Length: 144
Length: 54
Image (tube, rainbow over all chains, first blue to last red; front, side):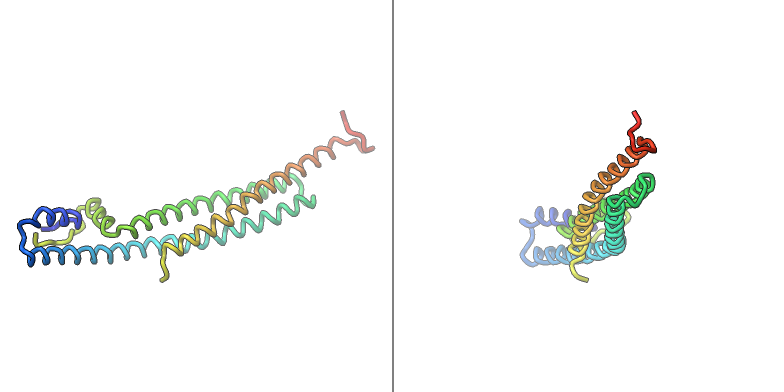
């Protein structure tokens, strides 16, 4: 019978009183195999997320460092009075715009980290949730 | 690959650390800009003889 791992665990709980030790052990092994497969799939999924967000995250760090350096330079020229208020205001606005763009990247990265942490904490539950979300995905097959 | 989540958390911590510097510098830049604007306004208010227009 095809089902999620959680559903298989629930079935096994119900069946346990009627099973002999050999049958019970076989069912447990099937669940363990399904859990191992789920952990492997979750690891693949996590790697995909990492690949998607790692490079943009690193680029965001470089970008925010550049904004910081440019801001320091702007503060210096403003303090020295070597820039007009109009030029200074335009430069500051451009830096604020760049910083807002990086803040969006930060939110995406933080969201990915939260999502990945939830998956890593319970990879089997995550894969089970994927079966419920995408019914076309073939669920693991159990003999019980 | 080392722990990918730990790696991303470090990236996030770097972003937040530098982001804090940026926030402080934005305030400093706004204050410095206000000072420049005030200076320009005071300069514009002066007559060619150094008197302040009323």
